[in-house]
Image 1 (cartoon, helix red, strand yellow):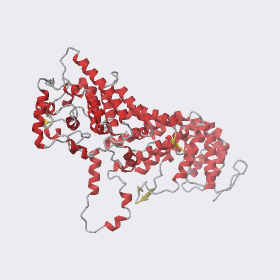
Image 2: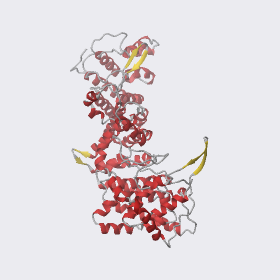
Image 3: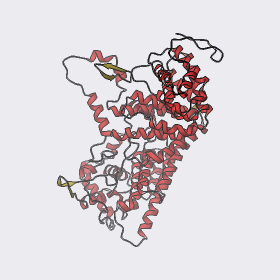
Length: 606
């Protein structure tokens, strides 16, 4: 029955087939001890085939006696709130919103119930089909053309509730957290929920930081559960042709462009979907009518930086979520400089936990190395800060009067800072030298890298072999400092350790004693990666081959380095503070730079 163009305040209820008396009469009977009509009322409201006109009639009657609907009638109200108003005619929607407004203003005890009802519509509904006595749920990914309208109605309802109950935001966040879909749900379900959460922050700005924290927390769960190696392996397996009985090439040609944007790894596909939503939100907040909005961007940066400190920085080996800040910082150089300054303050702050200081150093080096939008001038300023702090640290150790040993547990932030310097120079040395070779070399020599490499703390012994090897190749080429002899000596000093375990004794090696990872290693997600690619400094394989010395010249090179070191005794004979391990010669050749896996050190890909 279609009901349109009616005046709901002055028009009497539409005549419909119903049983029992009016809502007011039913409540009166219940007070007198007669619950028959009351139970009948709840049964009729729960009818899945209820008509629009019936819903309108009921809602109008409930509105007329809303003051009587105290907490004693919560089961009845829960039944009313479950009425299928979303997706119904506009007349039903208007009446339901009017009822909702009356209810939360007259009976605030039902505020949370109303909020839960609205939030439950933030995801597509599942359709349950009964076959053979078993409930079978169909796919959640069916295309629903009504979803945009349904979501609009949900946000309209939330805004109404907030208008009548200004303190709503205090009760909203626990509900949003509780109703967040399980991360193994379909990408479409997760996408809709995250989209609606972000949309909510537009008209409830007070919850934006909490909402971002909730979303990033869920993204990190996905991110750390799909390792880089697993994602790459899934993509390689998908790209390998399979031998079959039939030639399917013709059938697959039509949908190939769509399929190439789908991640083969299911967790990576969910993560990619949500990263697209989050980055689109960042872009839309920071740009108004196509123009950059500085104040809004600044506020969003503060919120994201708070979430970064609380969740992202302490999370080890996340591969993609941190690119939200990378993307935001690309909008304005001042944002990138502020982010670098923030990381620097964490690194050099002795009151911070050592693990966070090491993580900040990793972010600092990786950001400077990989962000194309960070100019050489800014990189040099950051290196000056890092090297000044590093040299001051070496001075403090030399003047302490104690024997200095290569101990990661004591000097972890120092080694992480050294690795950040090495990593940055590996990626940005060309940019420093290409404008003016003479001035560039003078700058590199002014950093006094020789003292860093040859100090008693011996950072080349601790930093990632692939980084130190490439750094050694670069500094050898430009004759800034010679590292290979020290690397060879370190390799001879550190032996594999026999470690006892439940399975017996075994030889173990560790090529990553710092437990390093570079947060801005290559971005693997396809759709969201299209926004990152233009901003990203990829590794140049040609540069690597230019740096490698010819095999015939390697012996002469070693003799030259020995001459360079004559009369200079490196203080690297101390025992490694943590469990020693071997950097075999196979991982010390400067063939690539990248983050290591936890177990071993394979060839890295860029």
